[in-house]
Length: 120
Image 1 (cartoon, rainbow, N blue to C red):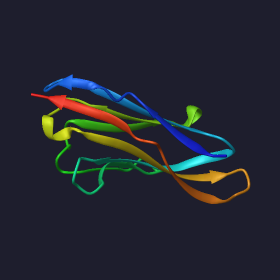
Image 2 (image 1 turned 90 degrees about the horizontal axis):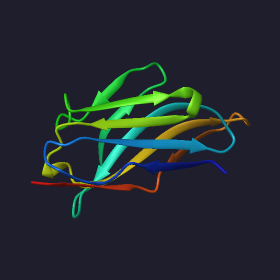
Image 3 (image 1 turned 135 degrees about the vertical axis):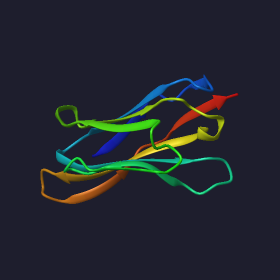
Image 4 (image 1 turned 90 degrees about the vertical axis):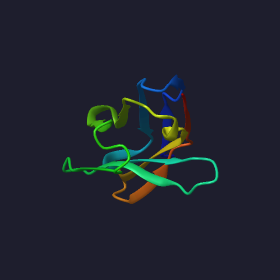
C-alpha cells in the first residue's frame, strides 16, 4: 500500500521558519511530481508549491521568495522549507504526489496533513 506521511508542522512566531517533510512508502518505482497544498479554516485548499520530475518549480504568489520545495529521490521524500512565516500562512499543509508503482501504474496520493500555526 502506497502512502504519504508528513511531518514538521508546529507552532511558531511570525518571522520564524519550519521545514515540512513528506515521505512516500510502499511499492514505489519512482515519484514523478510533488505538490504542497494548504487549507486554512473556512477556505479552499490551495496549491502552495509544486515540483516536477524535471525539476521545474511553481509557487503561489503569496509564498514566492519565502518557501522552497525540494526533493530527495533516494528517500522518496519531499520538503517544504518555509521562511519568514506570517500569520496568514497558518493552515493545515498537505503533500500530494504522482507516483509510478512497480506494476507501472500511475497513481496519486495525499498525505494526512500537518498543522502549521504562526502567531503574531
